[in-house]
Image 1 (cartoon, rainbow, N blue to C red):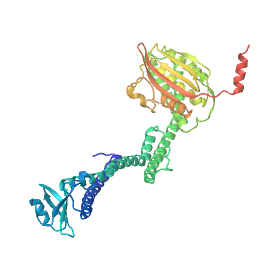
Image 2 (cartoon, helix red, strand yellow):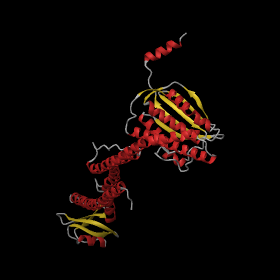
Image 3 (tube, rainbow, N blue to C red):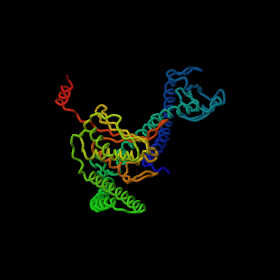
Image 4 (cartoon, rainbow, N blue to C red):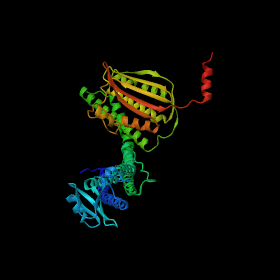
Length: 448
């Protein structure tokens, strides 16, 4: 049995329409059939009344009567005579009778003239049945045409009635996991109001729980940053202490662990800052300068892995956004590219303006992302189905949030080629409009 509410409504309503139409068609057919028989009897009576005025000759046509009706007038005379059929008809009383004449069943009307002579008006019963059936079938045509029309109307009404529910489902499916905005109830059908109220109540409870977790993460990260920083300084001071090779390796492992912990805490603080709305301040940002600053900061990390880090193009482009958030977004993407690029690989950045959009593109020479992970790669703490190396899974999530808050989009695609592989991350932001005075000044400076 189908679980679709739309299918159930359509099947139920169309079944009612078909059943009602069948019952109505049956009664309409029977009524029309009886009416057609009565009409033919009336024709016999009218022909009989006309024939009383003068005797009819044998095989004389009846004027005004359809030939296909096969109506005939038989003169019976003043006494029983002739064939047995005529003698049997003569003895019948005046009126309508079902009898036989010349070997076929007929409907016959007997009439007597004032002079005592009698006549019979006959019509084949087979023809009467055929004519009545045809007339009755014609009455079913409107019903036969109406049923499909009603089914179409029912389908349209059901689709329009369930439209708000379908749109609501599409809206919920299209939302990000962290979008806790309440659903609009204004204009929604009254039947959906309790449903919307329940969903909004659930969203409010989930938002309160998530907000509580955000505050906990932010507070914990903030409280842990100070002791981690102190431990890192103490570990750095051990560099001047004379110790064995084994002890030095343990100190280096400790320093790597604390560096990773400090990086995780910094990312958690950035994430908490984004979620709390503290990074919503908008200013004019030179995107090319931000990208160059990120490359300068990460140059040493790339050199450790012998990764070639540089620009393919770096056009001057301005955007309206938060400098800290955009720097964090680009930095996290570039850090990811360096981390997953093999030793001796390349990471290329490009900053350009395409029409009204500012575009930052980062390409690496790593293995790319498994297709099954692409849809989840922006989820917090998701490190892929085959995680490798150090990382918390927050970098791309932070970048996505920062770009979303700036009104842009970030796209990821694998680079598939005959002689290369890797990952391409494209960030698109609305480019800031240059004021006319600034444009004129730039033009004047370029003149000799």
